[in-house]
Amino acid sequence: MFDVLVYLYETYYRPDACPDPDVLVKKLSAAGFEDEEISEALGWLTDLAETTHGFSDHHPQQTAFSFGTRIYAQQEYDLLGTEAIGFLQFLESAKVIDSIQREIVIERALAVAASDFSLDKLKVIVLMVLWSQGKEPDGLMFDELFLDDEDAEPRLLH
Image (cartoon, rainbow, N blue to C red; front, side, top):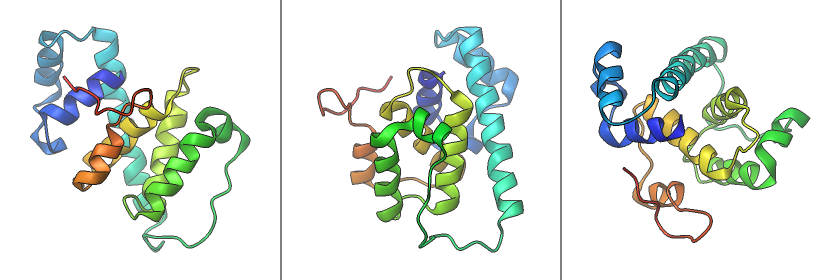
């Protein structure tokens, strides 16, 4: 699923640049992605749009940047881990994401609920949340989001 998401990010610089769902499925199949992977990624993106819409409806008066401390539930901590939580705090303190975007990232990470969840996957989720909202991180943050943790070299995208 994450390969499909990265491909969409690279290929369509804005979500509104994506073709209709039927055409998109055909293009992703032609690019070599499996049907199950495509379906999972597109379902995840649909849920991302619903989550984003839900947060904006339920928290319209919340300020963009909260000055409180976020306490993570055990389920969140177990999935994300210390490194990913620290990375989220870093992004929020650097004003790359706000508190509402942080909550959307956490919700979308929990939706994946993979046993092999990693910081790299969290970085893709952050990019997709920003991409879905038409926001792009600055160059330095973009590089940080695409650094490979193992060798600290820029990750090669498709």
